[in-house]
Length: 351
Image (cartoon, rainbow, N blue to C red):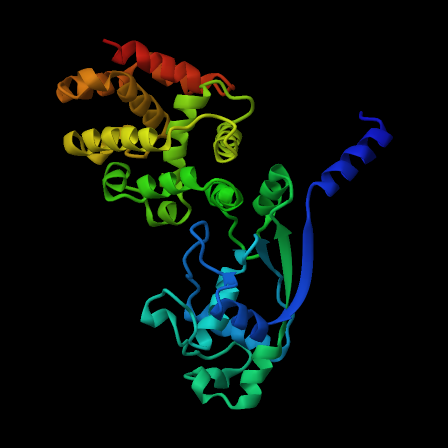
């Protein structure tokens, strides 16, 4: 057990590394910040506005009745706030007042349905409310928790990771995408450009939920991290990806942005032109990151050869999927299991 004085010291040091602030603001003030561009509610790491009209009505109803609502969380940089948690709530308010930007028409100018407490809300839009009811919503107070960008990276990451006030936690990649926006953004942009490309989505075939939670962008980061930062993990793959993205974003490790982007696009193009999307899927049809790792890294090493022999590459993939080495490597849950299965793949794919 750690000495109590040492424990107190560790707690004090970590508290110093996280800078936060809090304000109580009215929804009217937040609307003004949003309209002048000082509050950005849909950065790339956030999910789409997807509350159903019943949920939106319930929230408007709560505000009208003065029912306490959870705080929202924003990240502060030098010029604006970026919303971290609270998208559904703020989007509901902005939609009701018809000021929600960059959304389809049916997402704006919310038309209420029957409330669970106030039945008479049905069919009302903002234009039907009298000035008093509009003012009631605008002057309603919302707690704003502010995370400052001069906080230590690891503490910001932990804070973002623990936010769950909306009932659905951010994915690991959504958090990375948010956290490292304060540094060099080139890597983040490559992950987005490649991960959201039609060619990449064609070979991955992600679900809607995977698209929302930046699963494809994480796969691109996974390829770069395993290729450039090593196959042996200190703890787990998520920490490995976070550490690598931080070091690249802070220019602590070399990353040739143009060359790396060109390279992965070449590999994706080869796979798209020669294989169906099941290339990364196990016999049960489920996408398997282990296959993604092995196939992408092997192709990266031997692309000059296999670019002229796609049928032979396909045979090697099938052989790898059936190999005892692949099956056994996936049964061993250790820091070296990723290296074991990729080493097994290299033995099969090498020329």
